[in-house]
Amino acid sequence: MTVTENNKRICVSIADPALAAALAAAKAAEPLADVLEIRLDSLDEPDVAPFLEQLDKPLLFTCRPDWEGGNFAGEEETRIDLLCQAAKSGAAYVDIELRADDDSRRQLLAAAKGTNCQVIVSWHDFKVTASAQGLSKVFQEMYRSGADIGKLVTTARDYRDVLRVLSLQDEAAEMDFPLIAFCMGPLGVISRVATCDLGGYMTYAAPSKEAATAPGQLPVATLHAMLTELTNAG
Image (tube, rainbow, N blue to C red):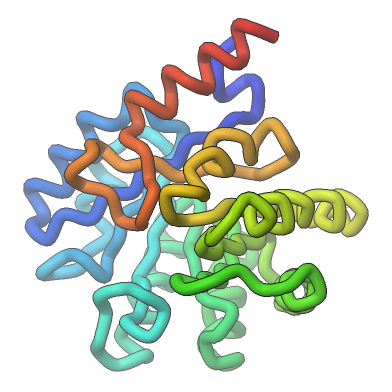
């Protein structure tokens, strides 16, 4: 059984600033990736077409604004236009933040409607992990957002933070709402490995140790080997 067949989706985040380097990194990661995330906010000249034309794996396009830990500091209209273009042109997924304006989210949902593109609504906390009640509130907002998939990522300060985030999968299963949920930071690494076995829709990896886009993100070769070993052990 392969990792993909066991619903252990590995999404490799590509965040090189130069288009040629980003394409090369994506192509190198394809054999071990189930999904490739193209970080448009990291590109010097953001463009979706070259990736859709030259890559075979399903693509997720993200244009993370600086107010959510990303690199995009331009106009919101420009950011949403890029994501809408991706949705209409063949992307498998597009990502928009839960904190984004309602109009931005509605515009992207409308662009994805009638296509094969799924909208991920995301929320990140780069400092701490909220209480169980606080996390549930965020999850419920995601569920009501109209998106197809939720992504909730926090920073783990101790093992209890990890357990609270992973336990959100119980709520997600009850609501029949696919959820990506894990923790960042050294203490959160285990959640990146365990999340898919606990109901998580997808986990994220880096092309290499040096190219991580978030604290605690494992290289894809390492994560793939760990998930494959777990699958074979089962």
